[in-house]
Amino acid sequence: MNIGSLLANGMGGYRSPLPDGSTIAAVTGTPPALLGMDGPRLVAEGRYQFGITTPTWALAMARLGRGPYAEPLPVKAVAAFAHDDRLALAVRRETGITSLHEIAEKRLPLKVSMPGREMGHPARWVMDEILAQYGFSEEDLVSWGGTRLDDRPRAQNAPDVVPADPSFDAVFDEAIMTMRWQKLTTQYDLRFLPLDDDVLAHCAEIGMPAGVIEKDRLRGVDADVPAIDFSGWVLYCADDLPDELAYLAVRALDEQKGAITARFTGPTRPLTSPVNLRECCRDLPVPLHPGAEAYYREQGALT
Image (tube, rainbow, N blue to C red; front, top):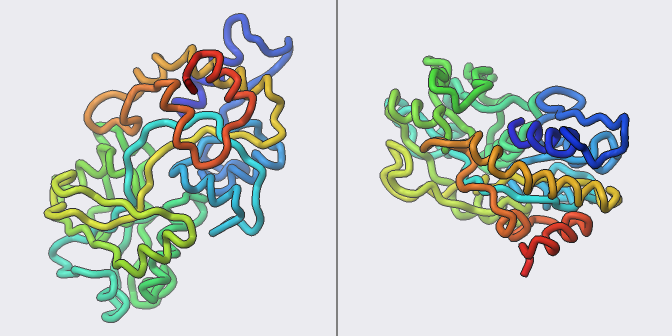
């Protein structure tokens, strides 16, 4: 929302380079623009000219037609943003749970805080894949007497955020750099469950790279915890977006980079380093759009 609104301001504000009468809208959060997962299809179909998703590997899956995407989608990258994140699977220590295997074996009726499928959030699709590898699903949890808590806060980085319904037994979610996770780990004693090697291998084969929640990154992380990497935000467009629009988007990013960086401050900032053109055009999950590439080259960012 922060990046999208400032890009819109840069492309359509004072002395806009767009034709007279052009309009720019930053759309987020609800149908027909579901968070993350449906964005590549909507952009590929021309419903929107640009989209932003996380993690960056989700866009690679869309272009390859892997995972939740039934067919390859013609999308290209415009810019990437630094964002150091993992998917965390944490349980309250008083549950005594030390492995995801125990949940299925003992049919534990847990109250789990995690994104609902209706959000269209990549974290939920990943969780469905992971839970299936351990032999259960949300529906199984419900049949055992558990529930999925619909308690994910809208503003995860707000100082007064309520991190979870106090009745929770587990939180399976991403955005571990936010105030939400800081509060979860200081207000409650949590144990972070590692993913097994075979599960990590399965996920990597699909396109979800492994990561590590580093020891002491959060209270309760007593050793490195194998997890799924959830790093990176990526701005993307359709392959056939006119070069001039992709060029103008990166120019707007360049002009607004200070304002974007200023929106993300403090130890729990989701954007983990200042916007830098040299970094925005590197290590991309899909090919760079030629219009965007032209601006980066003009500025010497690709040299």
